[in-house]
Length: 244
Image 1 (spheres, rainbow, N blue to C red):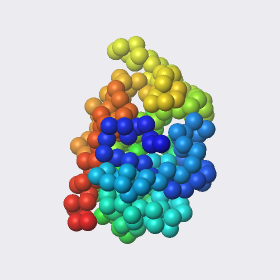
Image 2: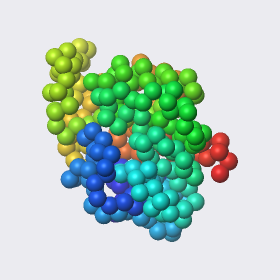
Image 3: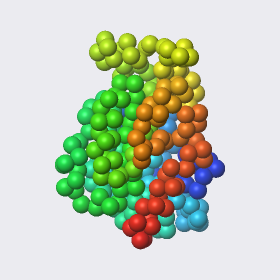
Image 4: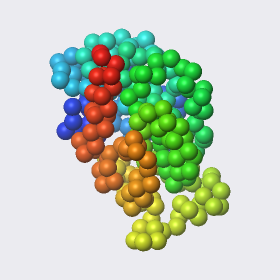
């Protein structure tokens, strides 16, 4: 079984851990009952031949790290995903800077003291109608360090994150787009499951405001990796830079 998002790409999933991820990021799709697998996914060397192995599209590569590294060592092309600020891996790393997107991310000055920053493939920010200002402020700091940014537009299983916001937050979330009368969020099927998804108009409006070196996961009309290509693009750039 493979991640349905990766169909039609050169990326293959690998999740060697089992059980819930203790990071428990907000609205975590891996910990959700409908995640596509309940058992570890470890492709054979033959299955991974000619593909890029993505370690931990679910769970975290810094959890049970020895198991992750031992599993990854059998593959030629591999990158690691983590929301924990430790980039000591033998290959490119994708770092999720705001695993709980309504909370402020770690100060960049603190992260700059870490080792292995060269391993960063890109920094991922989770963005929603509730944290646009904060994300744009945090992105500027990373762009100043010439680190690519990829935005993941959040999808929610329920309205809980918005109901907990201020009255101003709620008003912004629920109001209709002034040009096309489209809700900011719409309840619909995403890949395999239903969730509250950001509208195409909302995504396009955010991306039009973005700086250079800021990309998005997927496209405004598709969440499938075959329509995006960001991970493959930045993987090869990072590998070339690291000369590995």
